[in-house]
Length: 178
Image (cartoon, rainbow, N blue to C red):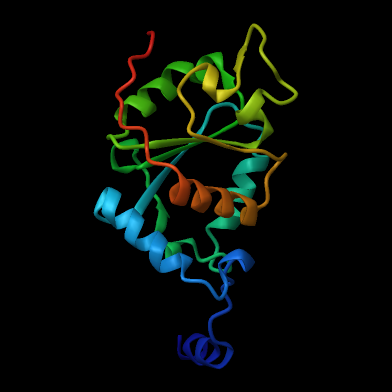
């Protein structure tokens, strides 16, 4: 254990700030906006609606210390009831449609929905067919999309931060068809 601490103190922090945010006051402004809207840091709930797991691998990379998303005030949570952002990957399969609608309804208002990857944005190579509803916005309202197959962790982080800076979360409760 002492060797780990010694190495940590010797090497220092190796996380990286996005190039767009270096030498700017964007991060304090971002923290103030998140606190103004939610009163705390921003919680993200990830839902895999039928993904090939490419996007999940990039989300896993986003959670490592190199990207330091907690430094931006973002963290992933296990329940949609504790989330502010619903991050959906993959085209929505028929088997996941009801689960996605329930997760959307469980996220308290105000909330954002982000469709991640080409499949979540437009259905990708799966499209719409007997087993697939296609894009996420065919099932629930989407506030932002992040394209790419799969999008890189820096792109995911950049788009989430841009959405927070530019958009107000949807506050209207939308009724969904059962």
